[in-house]
Image (cartoon, rainbow, N blue to C red):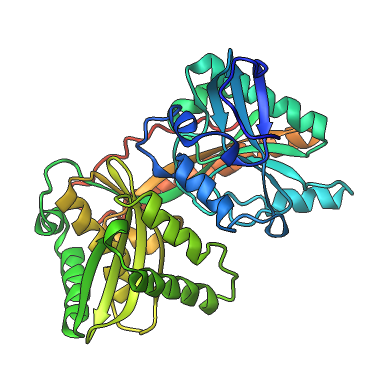
Length: 396
């Protein structure tokens, strides 16, 4: 598609784009409130421009936009997927079921933020009518293109009602930190815990302190090229340890530092003036989002300090009320990150598969809800905050 020009001659209705650069940043960003950095034009377009998204890795941009009299009234970040890499809503069993019956599960179409299991707005639109039109366009495109399915990962609770009965609901659990409103310092946060958990955290932090590790907290516009290079080295180290291929490029990290200078937050651990570990996060309006970490030294407690405690202190200092450090990890509960439900929706083109998978989704949701309720009973807090996140639909 040719580059976008703001003109009333654009056709009304859905238009599919092969690159986010075809829409000016200000036009795209006018569809969301800016509170979640992951749906911003700078983040999503930066992934494409700096080589993080490649067809060979299963990511081909295919964004949905909705136009009316030359104005953008709706948009969805979307991708044609030839595998399930980097999604964090696991559907490997679905792909195996298709293969068992001699059918192809890939390609499929996905609405998501690549490599980022972060809940946030997905149907960027001016009103529910536009959201319904976006969903209708997804279904139409899926059928016309011969894809097996369309998926919307980690959408917000207030988008639930936009999905029709044919969109299967899945539920999972993440672990999020929330300030109930009366914590001003790290000691306030610890004081809300039972003695055992409070003592454990203090001991973990003391070990790191005794090892001589000190931290520098940098925003993107405060980080030098050397700081960014050190953080990227830590990122690569983690992927090497687990035998995985890193998807994000150094150019992308530098892009974030320039394009989102106050939203990129880096925690660098130093020992004898040498960087030995680090984590990087993105900052939203009221939330800190943990993304990646790595270390060159194996120091007891360093992971917890770098990934959790430094972030909690930052939230308390900056007045952020939430900290979402990433997917998975039951060990987070003992450090004050409580189970929180997250959502996804799935439209399956083949009616027989849709019916069979719907039953599985209902069973899965029931199991997840029981797990979340049980996990909350292990809260470290004396008077644990009730999870205010509404329970999602039990699968359709």
